Amino acid sequence: MELREYTALTAVEMAELVRRRTVSPVELTQAALGAIEETEPKVNGYGAVFAADALAQAQVLETEARAGKFRGVFHGVPIGIKDLFLTKGVKTQRGSRMYAESVPTETAPAVERMLAAGAIMVGKTTTPEFGWKAASTSPLYGVTRNPWDVSRTAGGSSSGSAVAVADGSVPLTLGSDGGGSMRVPAAFCGIFTLKATLGRVPTYPLSPSEHLSHAGPMTNSVADYALALDVLQGPDERDPQSLADSPVSYHRTLGELPKGLRCMLAPTLFGRAVAPGVASVIAQAFAEIRAHLPVEVIDGEVDWADPIDVFDGLWVARGALYSTMKREDKDRLDPGFARMIDRAPAIRLEDHLRTLQARAAFNRQVAESFRAFDLLLVPMAPVEPFAAEADGPADMDPSVPVPWARWTPFSYPFNLTGQPAATVPCGWSPSGLPVGLQVIGRRFEEDTVLQFCAAWEKHFDWRRRKPAVFAGS
Image 1 (cartoon, rainbow, N blue to C red):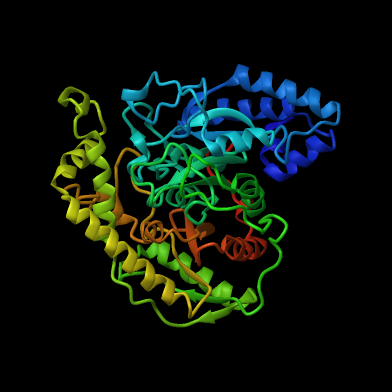
Image 2 (cartoon, rainbow, N blue to C red):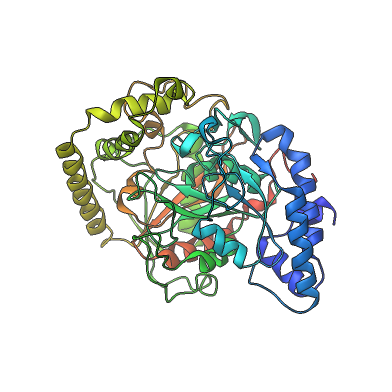
């Protein structure tokens, strides 16, 4: 299979071709590995590639397909896995030199479910150390670069997962999101993802900030995401926050956009300035939504106070788990992560409990606001991708508790609330970089968010434009 043919396919299309025996899992896997070989030297999206193991698994799946046996809806489809997810017998390095030789004895629920559905893991994708920040560097892997402009960041912490989809090496990856870690890199790299309601996709092991962290797929089509969410959702005894099975098939209901859907279009939140190149794209997207989508636009604004102090308190508190680390080990960490560890002991128990109370109050305020509208649409990030080697824009203040949260002010609020929040490509800035539109729905209403995003995708086909680094181009 030629790379140009391979990269034109979605995961849903690949699986259908395998089911019809038009294409084999081996052909798809060989194409994926060829795409990685072509793009990886330019972007560094993979911490490890498993060529031999992936091809061996593809051969098994090909034999099964010839016999009419299919494991699930992704039988024979190559995927990438963020290197924070446990993979039994395969290194999970977490972007850290401390875990460079760590080999888990069990597999994370999301990975188990994708593999059980027939997907083929071709590699583990890069992440900042322990997924702690929204940039794309780590002590272990180095710099992961944006396929649209390799001098720019890919965002984080699901850095490599976004890059691997954007550069065409795989159609689907798994990522995680504790404060924007799926949505920020997806927006920067011009792909789609949704942070589903907290607990919709079970996570294990639990994050130190388990009340913030989500897991899920990252894709270049809404249909791919919806089918993957059908596979991934449902309870797991290892995650006490995991939700009961949804009665909804997200994939089958994609075309059912509710009548009278009320959308609030907000060019910013909390009065934060948005870069002109981003603001102009968002304004154009809002104009097209008004003109072309069958929704009711709600004029107004939300009056929430920025919950940055709440997020700071919860995010920094996770550093307490590393407080006994030896100084020589701490010196091997990402300097920003080490600073966070040093801050954690100053948080008293009563401070932490008050932070949880403040989070609950913010969540109630947001939920009450959503009585006036069904979806809130805002820019995903107020800045364009910055230098690849940097942790943030040039004016970022590294002395504050969570520096990266200051330039991602529209993402972490919805980790606090646990609501479904998607980012969908909506255009390109004058510098040629993708801009993401964030679509936020009520808790448990992923179907509505996905239906809106599918309607937008039908109007605005972002896949027609390819990044500078794209396999087979």
